[in-house]
Image 1 (cartoon, rainbow, N blue to C red):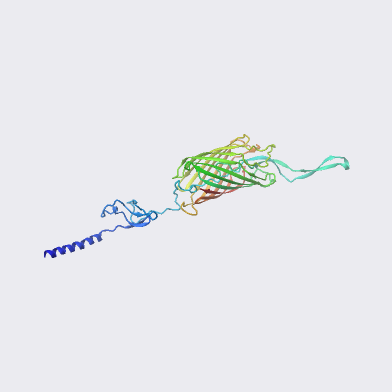
Image 2: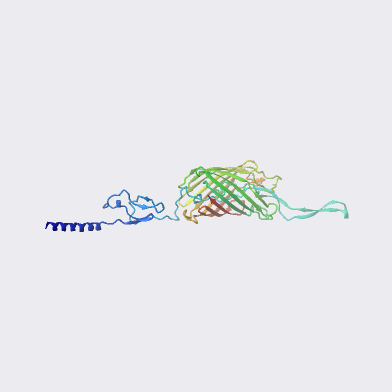
Length: 410
């Protein structure tokens, strides 16, 4: 009897243990990383404590790793996916093109007073000898001329402004720019003078050092003036050397404050320019210290430049430049393999001469306030932009400017 009693007690205990285990709640399964695993046992007091709250496997390195889980996250809830239209800012390890691009710009150059034809030629007979029926004449071609202002001076003050085609942030890049200025000085030229247009191409490069906080660069403009024979010219402009140092260069927010110096040396051509007084323009060196900033909000950024150009010749104008731009990240996806961003921009440019502002001077520069509006398309290591610029303060240096830029980041 005692044997049968022990046998019955043993059977009862074996039946009770699986039943108790079946009543215990099984921890939910959560998908994280690259495989499914069970939620942390620490979140369930009925389970024994474990030194690790989760266990995943790296599918590439095939090395076991352990990661903590936020205990406040509800079971079966994954972390939110990244939003392509969110305003997160990349770290400093991203290519420079993933931050804001360079400014477009606005400047055409300086102008001078020149003697040009203002009407069709006529012919007159001038007596040179003899009398009566034997008198002889020489036929002379007479061209009506006038001194007019606003005529551009090719090769002078072209493609050198610190803000044009430039970024406050030091960036490794090679860049190209194209500018087309329509109806130059049309508001001040006589109606008999044909329209004058100007095309300009710029090529340059920039290379960083000091861990990306400084850079040096060079740029070279090419200028073509079209209109009528007396002003038409094609020249290779002056070479500009640029230095840049970022005193503030936050890789997380993208905020920057930098200063630098641009020096434009008289290496290029100046064309066949004769001024009103019979002289040729002085081909001086241009020294241009500058400062600038970039300030980023989640989806908007602001970029500003201030510079002053100081020529080595007192005959040339000293000019103060102030420019500010705003861009909006309409689309931003740094991980995209094709298009990583799309940014509409607007720029305000105030150009103030500190001398030679009188239009009757042989060489002069007038106050300018220009508005540039365009857009950039960002690729993984390339930036393309197109814009138009309209002067809003008279006398206008040109009617409208169209421009495009292409930058390769490396």
